[in-house]
Amino acid sequence: MLDTAARLFYRYVCKRSSTFTLGIVISAVFFERAYDEACEYIFETVNNGRLWKHIKHRYENSMTETRYTHGDQPQASTDNKKNR
Image (cartoon, rainbow, N blue to C red; front, side):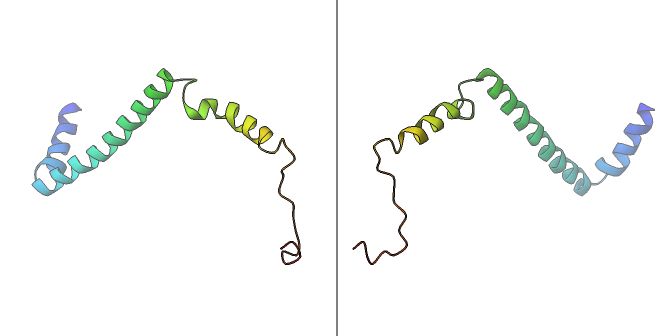
């Protein structure tokens, strides 16, 4: 079975340089995608709790609560010419 798979691989991929090059390019694209996903997973696992997406809720809620604490909320105006 392995002999048959190797024979088919040679016949359809390695026999001509154009199909061999195409096979290398396609393999490189898939390998790059898998390698990138693996590195992202490892990085996020090692830095769990330290990345912005993990701690942004602490800062975004406090910024929205303290933004208008002094009564300086913008007033909605229907006619801008009167206020000038």
